[in-house]
Amino acid sequence: MTEKQSTGETVLRYFAWLRERTGLSEERLILPADILTVNDLLLWQSRRGHPFDQAFAKPEAIRVAIDHSHAKPAAEIGSAREIAFFPPVTGG
Amino acid sequence: MTEKQSTGETVLRYFAWLRERTGLSEERLILPADILTVNDLLLWQSRRGHPFDQAFAKPEAIRVAIDHSHAKPAAEIGSAREIAFFPPVTGG
Amino acid sequence: MAVRVSEADFDVSEEMARLTGDDTGIGGVSIFVGKVRGEAGAEKLVSMTLEHYPGMTEAELERIEAEAHRRFNLSASLIIHRVGEFKPGDNIVLVITCSPHRGDAFGATAFLMDYLKTCAPFWKKETLVSGTTRWVEARESDDEAAAAWVSIGK
Amino acid sequence: MAVRVSEADFDVSEEMARLTGDDTGIGGVSIFVGKVRGEAGAEKLVSMTLEHYPGMTEAELERIEAEAHRRFNLSASLIIHRVGEFKPGDNIVLVITCSPHRGDAFGATAFLMDYLKTCAPFWKKETLVSGTTRWVEARESDDEAAAAWVSIGK
Image (cartoon, helix red, strand yellow):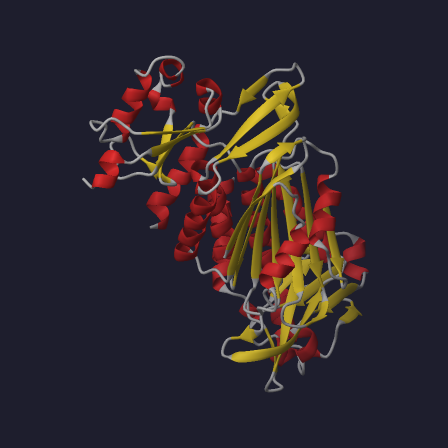
């Protein structure tokens, strides 16, 4: 654990219907120190109250990227600077 | 057997190195009545003398089309109006 | 190797000419163009909006492209994906791969499209004639197409 | 459905635009362009001549195209094959297939190229830097590629 991680801000980004349901495209905050994995973060979001509780009610429908790379539910947050939430992609 | 077949002329066409080795792109002639299949025809060509004997020395390297459709060695000549001889194709 | 995310349309001939250049080692060029379809299920589409994740999109497309170059013998490749608002018939995506032999080009273009559809952070929102808007849902068949490469390609 | 045998070069964008027209049912366009390579084995190529069998060529291309439409869900298709004398880098063949879904377009274009290479009566003759001319020999791998469709496609 670096000092940067425990004191630094993380940028959270929201895309597609997650952006619409949270009403946010981006926020900067200091994550609670006990959030270690993507799963922890999704659980925390679902307990954050309106509008996050509804947006994150079905975490299995949500994909997460840490610093521009896809991250699985068990992945560790580590010293992530930017974490993004979005539905499964539909480009192409 | 129609009268047309036994009396009519057949056009023989030659492509790629078969055209070069026979020195012919096309000839019209009445085929001997005992040529029934593609195999018969290839054998006849190989016994026709110079330059056909050399051009048709390896019949397995030669493909045949009857009236614009690929024909296997056992295919019957029938009342073919145009028979073509060529090496395996190399387009595309 | 090149990737581009752009609102602008692309010209297939121009992009192909630029990509092949004077490389006479190229024997086959495989191109795929994805277009906006005019129907969404039983309903007619008015428009489609494509949103993406700037920064991650480019990184992900470059990763996918690099993987294609590891798996296939490629002389050159290009991925262009458009973002913004589109009408039925508009171009969405262009993939071009060049190779000495056609098999590698065919394989690489299919591989790139399958991975792009399941990994690149783009999202489509449809506006229907009825006035409804809705986010397109990911198709299971796309996941399966991408997953198939894991077993056969590595 | 269209086939064309021509000495003239083709423009991919133009041909694609003409083929898709205003059909908004098309979601994927798969294109293949075959080009003259500058090397023939270890030797450098000066030019390549393409001979064909007028009459049979068109008939064979139409048969192959009709078979592709039976096997795949296609909205439109085009085959252009050039004949005459060419330099390294020149275009030889263009195949375009359009479909509601990309899988059918990818499959049909690969199918058309595999069959075209083994069934359509074209022959290539190379002129090398050394002055030698030689007829290109058919590749076994092309026969195998075409044969593979018999078992999986029917």
